[in-house]
Amino acid sequence: MTEAAGIEFTRVRVVAGDRLLLSIPALQLTEPRITVIGPNGGGKSTLLQLINGLVEPTEGFVSVDGHDTVDHGRAVRQSAGFVFSSPAAQLVMPTPLEDVELSLRRTVRDSSARRAAATQCLTELGIADLADRSSQELSSGQQQLVALATVLVLKPRILLLDEPTTLLDLINARRFIQQVEALGQRQKITTITATHDLDLAARADRTLLVQGGRIVADGPPERVIGTYRQHSTV
Amino acid sequence: MRSRRRPRRLRPREQVLGRRAPGRSFLHRAPGGLKVLVLAIVTAAVLLIREPMVSLGVVVLVLVTAGAARVPLRMILVLVRRLWLLLTVLVVLQLMLNDLFTTAEVLSRILACLLAAQLLMLTTEPTELVGVLRRILTPLRFLGVRPGRVALAALITLRSIPYLADTFHLAGQQARARGLERDLRARTVPLLLGAVNHARNTGRALNARGIEEV
Ligand SMILES: Nc1ncnc2c1ncn2[C@@H]1O[C@H](COP(=O)(O)OP(=O)(O)O)[C@@H](O)[C@H]1O
Ligand SMILES: [Mg+2]
Image (tube, rainbow over all chains, first blue to last red; front, side, top):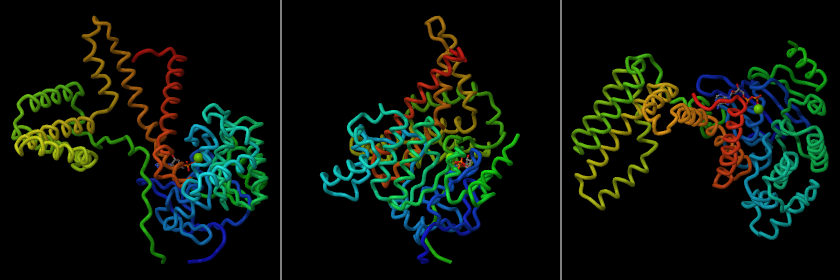
């Protein structure tokens, strides 16, 4: 087993039935802030879900800090948190506090310690006042921050964000991104964000353009976004 | 080359619902109304006659017909695999409460009806079945039944299945991402909320378009 830090794809192909969804011959991700852009159906979600083993490569290997995502799926998922784009659908408990506690159920046995950690996490995200509200009544922006909390409370090293702001308004999207960036820096979390918001995509060390199941451009954000704009002119 | 467990297969999306057997055989082309009628007669016969030999005969007949229409046998028998737990419980209960003959009779009757219905579903377009439903209901108009509305409801139900299957899959992925794959709540709450939401949105969209029946 290689002890390489970071995320590594080796001859990866994802096939469903007889359709090739994604093909990545070789890819190494080590930068702290990475963004993924591309048209709908291009393969962004598949790429992100390969990294935490939610999708397993039909052929080839994906590893996170040297751990294969097929053999060590659980461990990988513990160090790689995932936020989906639908805010409401990610919350399963009546209140935000209970939802964050639910994340800790397997790792923290003591219930008062669990409550303390959950409360602290909500405080860090500036949403402690929402702790006991009804989750389904919150605004989408608030719900998405709670969804972020349910993931961050596990202290992930990697954060995978799949179009996290697509369903939010401008203000809430900004607020969400600010929180992610601040926490990412403070806690040294690698963030990989799929997005259609090109301003957001530009705030990165590296950007991937995924289209038709392949990475068609990879490099500094300005250049890759430029390529995407060219591809998309109608 | 490293060795490891075989990767989990990604289930193609259409397969979640699209359990239609490919082909253009005589069975695929036969009118939906006729197929429903035959199914009704066969089912009634099996339920009324209560003879294990008759039921088994129907099972064989279904399998032979499927073979002639080139419907893969495994697509028919998959139903038995999905329901094996239920069927086992049933057999055990029957054996406890009744004798072997009754058990065989009940089991063969259930299998005959299930497999015949499965063959119909595999070789008929859902929209055609909805059309049959509307025609069946048309004589009931004088009772206040509006066949178009019932057919619309059936159509919406059919259309919702792939949506719900997707929501269910997504809920599973979300639960797994949080390490909650064993948590019933994490796997079902998003599905229920999604279903309610979908129903509301569908209703609004139809209202907006002024559609009340098909
Ligand atoms: N289970 C599946 N079965 C069949 N096709 C799938 C499945 N999952 C994803 N796809 C297809 O793979 C392609 C890439 O999907 P996805 O990664 O979700 O794209 P994106 O996130 O960029 O919109 C799409 O065309 C999608 O329809
Ligand atoms: Mg996507």
